[in-house]
Image 1 (cartoon, rainbow, N blue to C red):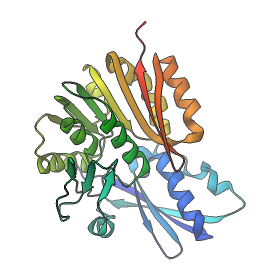
Image 2 (image 1 turned 30 degrees about the vertical axis):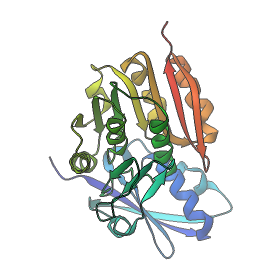
Image 3 (image 1 turned 135 degrees about the horizontal axis):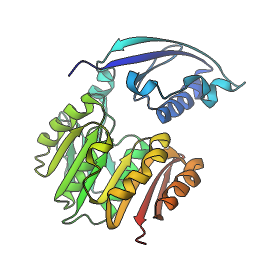
Image 4 (image 1 turned 180 degrees about the vertical axis):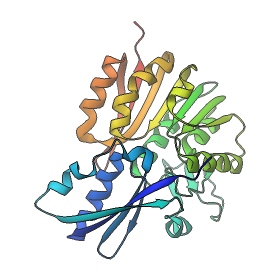
Length: 281
């Protein structure tokens, strides 16, 4: 497969705080998946195939009078821009029973000890959306169930689902780097029931699942929730995250149209994770 081409946006931000923090949050909603903080702003990276559907100039903070932000962009080959951060990131502990750590960290005594090397893939547990999805998996039963992890990133959710008893798991991501990283992390955690796919969700539409995880972004979720519903078995469960509290109504409306009923929710620093069950008409 040919090497991925990314677009790098260099943003100059004034004032830096909270400008950079807000900018990163809003860019992540558009599909930007890697960021570097600089002395005068940030560099943000997005896959060129995703960029065609994104209008960077329309994000809210760029039109705010409270910040002075300028940017320029250029094409770059994919590399691990997060390598310095990855080499220093600390283990994260969730709900007192799950540890997500890097290979170089000491093994924990937690019931679920997950070894994840991110390599620029999303899903170390540090982001609010990932930690909330992990909390959902820890709190719900997956014994002898099937799972589809959409936008799997590091495959951390798929790996935990297997440890929680799921016996057939498919993990899929459009990004080649994530696909390869998922395979590595699955081996690290001695997982045996996870199949990894590279591509769009349409590639798995012929399968049915008891549970679907989709930790992506608002636009993708709104477009694909009808697909997720069709892929769920009777009484199936959909877990979604990757959007803000203010977007709950939009997600809930899209789900309701697709015969999905909201049964649980989590909120952390304005980020949200929701649990839906399929209504069988």
